Length: 245
Image (cartoon, rainbow, N blue to C red; front, side, top):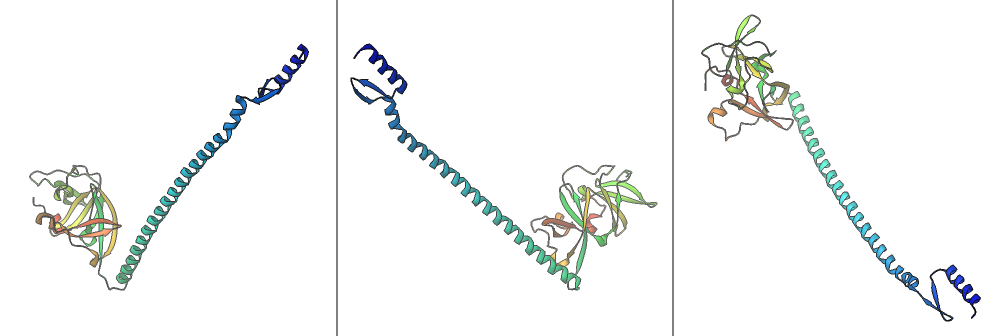
């Protein structure tokens, strides 16, 4: 083969790319062809990765569906519980309206983080905070005296009277003053916050817990459940006693 033909053949090989190399007049596969042979194996692995990805996504979706179902079940149970409470309350209301149940009205209020109540029949009125003047030689739970339409009345710190831990009301109360109809005349009781007036059936007032001491039991007439909260109804006669415990 002359030089011209060899050059022409080399140009043709360069134009064709590295697909084959010439040995004499015979072409054989090169590394490029071997790389082609590995493509099916690469494709299989890629498909497997996709399958694994879809499996993880499916598991995540299934888990989410379970969570949603459990949340829906909890909501339905809660709604059913509310419906039962509402039905029970409607039955009680109907019995109260028909005169079959004796009704008790209570004023709920807060002392620190706890809720208490007095019977409305034991209260005269509710005052905003006003000046309280200290007097000597009185029990610690007596804050002093204040004026009510020209009449001097004693004012007590109900927290100290009930032996509740925490800050006392101080000489300048920041809450309200409940005017209680005491057996010897009106007396003020400082509370942190007045909440609401509640009407409940007398049969729904529960006895106080039996584990309380005798001293604690004499201050509690009973326990009412108001909006799923326990409210202790205070014994008025014991609460307004000016004597130290």
